Image 1 (cartoon, one colour):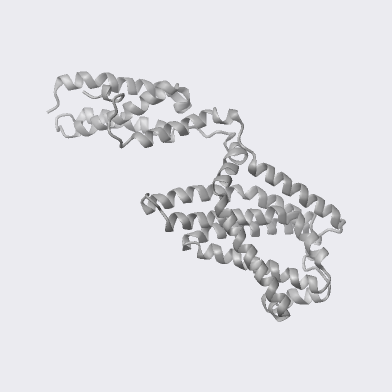
Image 2 (cartoon, rainbow, N blue to C red):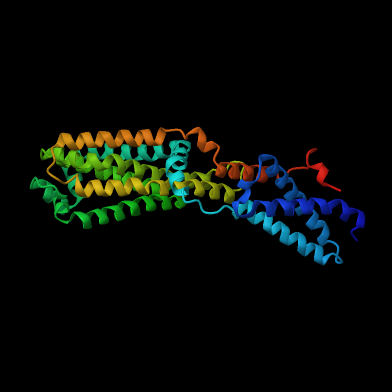
Length: 349
């Protein structure tokens, strides 16, 4: 049975936790100072321990209900209490996505290398044996190339519809490359290799017919956005595979969850790139604009993409309230199951 003395010592801390939860109001933990955040973390952990003690006493049912409700309010405040931020999407694309890209760059580089190796292999095979390109590309595309006619000419007459179709297709390819990571990366690797083989075979086939300028002036303007987006999505899929196959010290399930969280944000970050690429592919790439204009546009888009991806977030972003919330949650998670430190001992009876 719980003693009155224990209750008298513990109740002020429960009241203080309730006060902190109430003071936060609708602003979540961003309304609290750093010192109050630390205090909230300690009170939350210790009150959870108190609840376990109270539940062992069958005569303290009402107190157990009170503590359970209090901890539920605190939990919602900590983990789900942040209101949707209208600037959240802007912050994600401005800072979060580029940061995750840099963090997982090795995965994107691996996807690119797979694509490049396959493209070079297709070039060598197509040069040594023209039948390879004909077999791989199919009769319809080869007939168009043999007639010195770009198979993309039909896009010009249906630009809006083509743009929508291109965007949908590109986004579908990106999401497929990402999702196939769950096959231990085999599906993702296959998609990178297949696209590389296609690019190499098309390049050689057009070169044989003197259509290299027509091909690369068509590809360049939208390709500088579309291909990196596909590589990033492929890297996201490979990231899932890495979390699945190489969990390290983490349980495999937790490793997969963490890798999946990063990869989902990566593939979501590619959507604007693919949308812009779809517009360019429909309204610019197949037009009669001079080739040098298209190449200049490609160079400008590529430069902007590189600057966007390598740009570090501003100092003010680090001071954003949402960053404070994330840091608090990391602190709470890191200390939740750790032994009681000297500073937290004051909350024990």
